[in-house]
Image (cartoon, rainbow, N blue to C red; front, side, top):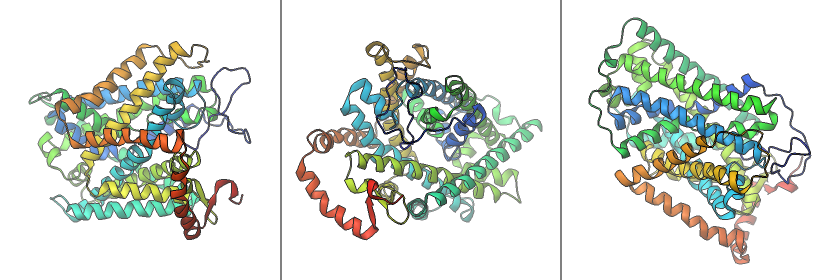
Length: 487
């Protein structure tokens, strides 16, 4: 997402523009329908196949579980509307980075970049690959949970397969993405249609007394939201292609208002489908929820479910690697990371060092972590910066009144999103403290040290230390600075 630059639309607007050279002009070819499809295709990935069990374990009943899924969809919609205002007001590339820079200055902006590089993006990649490995292994361990070593080895293999595909060829990575995006839409349709048929046949027993046994706490609600919102991650992506939208000031908010509720409807219907064949207890005991659903509904064709879920998760992981590799590349180019990470392969014309670096960090995460702890780790960091970014929107309503705002949401919306973000960050820590939150805070704050070393003071000794490594990698991987790469 970092590579997409939203350039100036008209000569007289006062929005903050990118200083990048205007070598080409993006065409406005994305209409309302395409914008909706981008939102749906970006959000639906591995989350809906792994989060239902975690959301239910924190709510303990069917009714609250479905309410959490709906509430997550509403929050994602409100957050996306806030980002739409920011994306049309500040049209620089870099995601949340330029928004935080304009609102709060360089240190919070750098900390976002630092956290994205080392926490948000790699942990997301690791979670998706662990999800793939659980579903890929499930058919071979019918009735029991696959061994942890098998799951982690499969996840590591998936990480490096995807890393190598994206390091070798941009075209190959794009082809893989297109094929597996279609696969995930197929499996979502199969599960929803099967569930609706079962409902029509009167399989509603598990929805009776759906709030019975509910034992909610503040921390449990926060953790339920963490897992539900993981499935909605990607809700903030459409504002990165504002310049390519036809009539963006109309189509951007409309695509958000239609697209994210459409995903919410799909997620709720998929959970309803699960509950038509499984009780809450059975769902919690299932090693892979969608596989159990397929075994009970689609037999003897139940093999279709783990196969297509595996395709779906591989597609999501490939998309994550494709965009996050570019994030590392941009950070290296801007001097926020080792310079060699901004180098490009001479033969393949891909940011190979950045992609391989990203694969290494993701592999490290799967060694000690499991899916639930990594989701909590990811969500804590992500919602800290989502909340801080939306708070920046509120701040700039008072400090940057001169900025043009083609899309302007009611002030109540960013206030609500900010307050919910504060709740999501603090509630699990206060009521159910865990080591991953402490590690996350320490790592985020450690970025301040590197900010002063690499960005503020630009100590020469730090560059000298990295120079031998840069020279060695140049020779080993045949990479050169981007400006020296052949066209």
